[in-house]
Length: 464
Image (cartoon, rainbow, N blue to C red; front, top):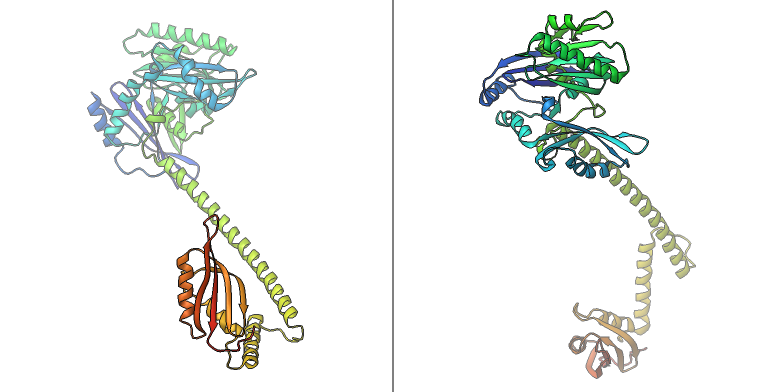
């Protein structure tokens, strides 16, 4: 799926937008736009005009703050744990900034390990400056995903093209001179915008800063790349020497050549397609993060899908395990039932359905028992009658003594009412002519009633 990378360069009175499209890893230029504006209200209008339309998941909008608006510091820590570093940064910055750190927004790069611990580059801007920049995008309802800092954003986008050298970006806000080594920003200088400044003074200042950066890089000669609206042929010729190659930076994307004033916006768009490994900043985080950011939503959806897949796998594994376990237990129980049946009926030669065969055997025993006692009340009938007490009546029978004329029951119940209800229920049975509670007393701890019942049999001659 294709996605757009949109770099937005906001000048003092000029707005430039570079819209790149990434499709299957290939970049192409969709549009290069510029508009003049006079005030923040008109800036909002121009943004709405230039970026009208729906934004898809994956689209990235990037803008940058001028280098002069931030305080960049490199902090050293005697430990490497990222959580400890994040907690210590505000305290460390508070002693190095001329303004209160609580009134600022801070962005950090990935920590770099050192022999003693870790080194972290931080950038801090006043919160008012950041909110002023965000205001037009909020009013235009545009999802600004990244807010970087010049010249870090330029090197993050164009570092591979520059390689080892010096990158000069001249805009109507400022001129930055950056030392780039291995495609990464190592040091930089900030100069005022060239407008209103004599060319000779501007050239001399640039030469001085270039010499300083060469000294830092320990190099006699470094190629110089120029970009931005303030770059002129006169400037390129003034910086050109026999040992120093100066080129106007350009870039070919999808067969279209981009150069000159649109290169800063293109660098921002390329920054949008960068990775977290880039040595750059993003102030669009914390309380300044984009609300409902689609890129985060996409990551959350992917995470949710992965989590759902894991849950389904766990459920499937659990169901399989339970099925195997139950199948094994079923076979074990079946074997135990067969063993019990063989123990009870050792003469049995055929075993097909043990439960059905047990029921059949019980019926046979009942029939044989009825033949033995004839029309007298049988022990089995009496036990059955006692077992069919109403549901609320719960008792524990401890003694069952059946004589020719009477039955003696002794046991435990939860209350006197339970004993009385049991006596009433059994008194209504045709098996008994009289039911008498011969003894009922509460236990010492009061938790039960110990009782004795004397039941006269309706049919004389019942056998024990």
